[in-house]
Amino acid sequence: MSAADSQSATTDPFDVAIKQENDYLRRLDVSVDPAQVAATRRREAAKLRKTTRIKGFRKGKVPVRIVEERYGPLIDERTVDALVNRAYRNAIERHDLSTVGEPVVSELDYRPGERLSFRIDVEVMPAIELARTGGFRVQRREVAVEDADIDEVIENIRKENAVLQPVDRAPRSGDVVAVAIREHGSGDGAAEKPYRFELGAGYAIPDVEAAILTLAPGEEGSFTVSYPDDFGAEELAGATRSLQIRLDDVRTSELPDLTDEFASEIGDFGTLADLREAVGKELLARGERQADEEVGEQLLDAVIEANAFEVPPSLTSRYLDQVIDAPEGADPEQVEEARNSVAPQVERQIKRDMVLERLIEDQGLDLSSEEFDERLSELGKARSKSLVEIRRQLAKEKQLDSLRRRFAIDKAFRFLIDGSDVS
Image 1 (cartoon, rainbow, N blue to C red):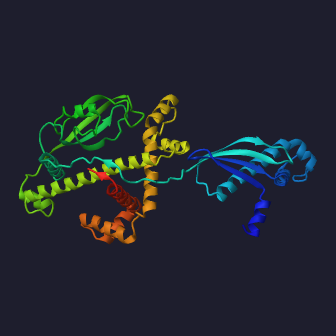
Image 2: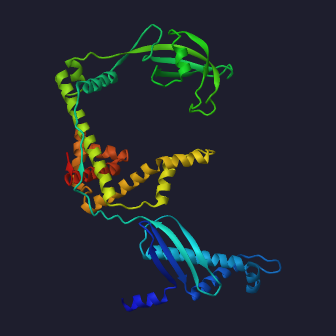
Image 3: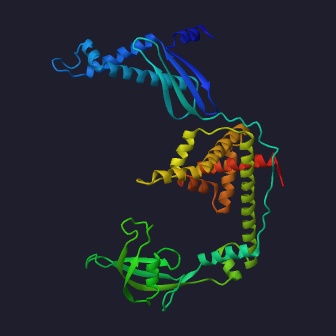
């Protein structure tokens, strides 16, 4: 220790002893030098004297004796608060504590002019040491693509390329209708509201859809409808209304025929067989990626179990606040029950994120600029875009950082897979 360090240590007004209670809890036993206590109290008294107004004295000119008589307890309270806050900040900075949540102060012992002592309990981020990251055995599910899977994708492609043709008949489920709706009792000048949607797709409430199915194009009628209790607009939830509904247009989806021409129109495919082959390869690749992610998650669980650590309760509570967004006036018991039901999943997610972050850091798995550009180029090629175009698009959508993180996690999963027995 240098002479300067020795002098600093002997003149430090705060004596802090830190005890590790568990992975995340630190106990700080603090005592403050009497001279520091006295100096801080004088400053707090002086600040109060400057702002105090007492009849018969000008502002800031009240005698110290009278300030002490009237506001002694308040001065003591402010003195203690100032010293506790300063000691806490000093301890956090000096010992580089990554705190979580609010500190809890207890065992306060204060007498004006004497040494102040107190205890602070504070939660910190646990220091994760990954002693074991490999040597595990996990099962990987087999990935297979069936003809029915390919048929489903191609059918969805047909629907995306369907042409809406007008029909002169009563509507059916799956048709796209154009309607005008006005609420009775809303005044003669109330404007009709136009809507266009697919019947049976859940865009309209059941009573409105049932009413539309009774009309022919050009017809209108008056209908009494009941809104569901969970309807989005609070003023209509559970209400009954009388509506005037006019059916203006009915269109049905005309699906393209499955031909070689259809395949060439939607992409660079010479024949329908080429399209089916491409779809099958994409489904297989997607299934392989999902299987790898599942294996990665299993291995993460194994790493968490092999390198056990505790999560700070306040961190879990903070995540639960985001997951359980209870509305104002919600039943406290139901809210607590909901929080308890998802707490294990939330804690697992926190541990997962912390282990991945440590693994990426320890193994240097973050992407270099060159690696990131290479991955972006692959992504751009799949979307028929250049590296500049895909980077510009992702930057505009604010996805670059999250995508870089996703690529780093992919490398972490590959590291875990390569270090274990995956069968």
